[in-house]
Amino acid sequence: MSLGWHTLLAFAMLGWQELLIILVIVVIIFGGAKIAGVGKASGRAIREFKEELKGDETAQITGTVASEVSPHEAEAETVPEQVTDTK
Image (cartoon, rainbow, N blue to C red; front, side, top):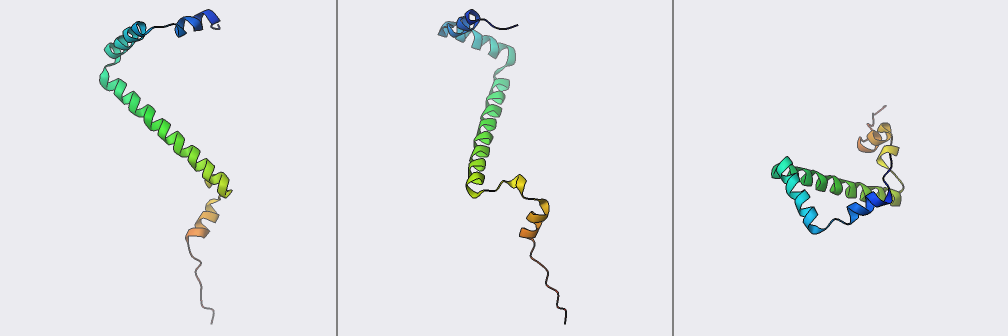
């Protein structure tokens, strides 16, 4: 079942009165706290997505990605080698 252009056009032609009525119905059904929680979660998701995009851009510039580094290589970078005296 596909939406025709006339169905999409009907949604595009909603005026501010219709949108206000829809908003009031949504607030009545879900309540203000639930809607605020959805807004907060959406904002957090968008922020995390943007941070990940910035991280990918930084990785492209440096040429490495965290998933490309094996756990053994990561451990070797963080733990100094132990030198034993063989005398």
